Length: 247
Image (tube, rainbow, N blue to C red):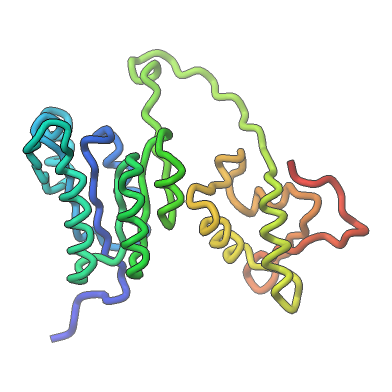
């Protein structure tokens, strides 16, 4: 019988810190991780008060396994320890190679580092309040924002202001660094995007008002973008032709 399992497909574990976030974040997290492989673990961790009501409905509807943790002493959070132990166990026994932690709690930064040291890929889905210590401990950070309560109540949504397109100088520095190590003095757009994600897991062109990385790069007068061989390449413009720097 042929092996029906695709061994090249990533195995993803989605572990949710229910004590630290809102149940509305779950669907967003599942959409995010769908690009990384097959979700093999779906677990939500919390105490008796947290896993009732809205969290109960969300976990049942989206096929998550609730992991109830009682507080044995006041002020002690056993849910965080259970989540961390389950993550390490899933990595060591080979059930998952990619982890999505749904939390904004910086206490999980050390767990992220340990998982990555062992070769696992770690993504964080968190709210705006997520500290840099946790964002930077992951391979990629995805920020979830709660729906606007004014528009959810049935009131007409105000017209959104046109986003201001910003051009951080760090992108010019990245192109200069990467292009200097090539014989042609240029870097592929895909490699540039990977580098920017590694240096800042929360990096997103949309955060700077651009629809994508190509759109962002093309706004720089200090950079030259060409299409070659089915892909886009970026290089610094020669100094004699350099115009206005990014701001």
